[in-house]
Length: 188
Image (cartoon, rainbow, N blue to C red):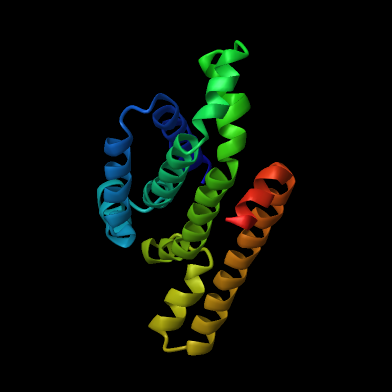
């Protein structure tokens, strides 16, 4: 998630702020969403062997698109009058980005991060197919032994972890997003 966040936020902020390359970035991000994660994981395992790198590559490829697209859209959707007022007050491009666009885009940015995190938690179970363990080990081992209690137990753990991630992002949103923006989001 950390690697995907760095990549997705950097590209999303750049494209959203400059207004250039948005179509290309969104197209590439949507193409990334179409890549089957298990296929990518098994391909990278075949090339580099069994180690954490294939999982990192596959999960990063899965997590970057929602972060990139939501960050880009969040920054692009900031009211032009707010940006114009900030520039009129003498803010530089970086000042407008960090003091106006990012705070106003934060609800969408956090939505992209939350979506990516939940997808990563749900998909990380495929690491067990490559022999790397994790919660997916219960599911894979249970399926291979026809031990469906183990499969259900592992599945429940994955679902609970996804709910915890959802809860963390809900709390984070309440803590870091301006109350005015939260109120505007509820009314629309």
